[in-house]
Length: 183
Ligand code: 5GP
Image (cartoon, rainbow, N blue to C red; front, side, top):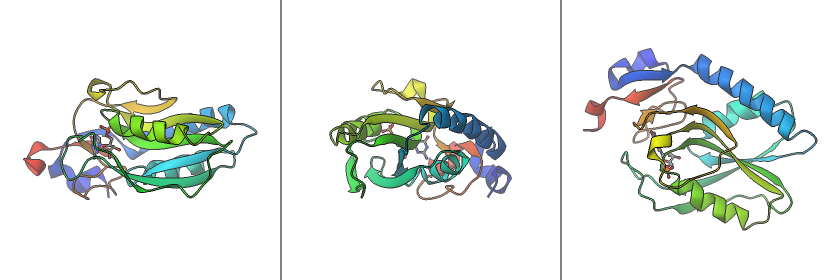
């Protein structure tokens, strides 16, 4: 689905699928260089990171493993609750692994801060973060992110894995959700 298919629900298109793909290629080249000779484990955070994980992993030239976690933080609304619960844990042992967490978006940073503390306690060889999007103005906790796709304004966006009440995840582009959809 493209932005034109849901044009009435978007107040602005921020990034097209082509722009996202081009930025992912650049990040993949950096990761290839940084992790050369290792077999990193990419940890995707469900459900939002499905698209970025699929595209980033295939853009890499190095061999990597993948695993998934699911955490709840948002409920059905458009504001972070700060309450994090692990709904699905990893099936991979992290001891001695080079772990790269792959995120869709960092908003307040609350979810990721909890997740990073949790993963660090499992003794990986290294632990870094790649996020497709970040909202610098919304961050409540400083999170060290090694790879960032794009910074966003502090507004609620959908597309490229990011949903509103389960909708718009399969939108190829990323746009700001029009207020009439949720008000
Ligand atoms: P944080 O804990 O950083 O505030 O929130 C992280 C999670 O909130 C993300 O993984 C994502 O699921 C959700 N989220 C934050 N901002 C947005 C947004 O603008 N759009 C959508 N669809 N989800 C968001």
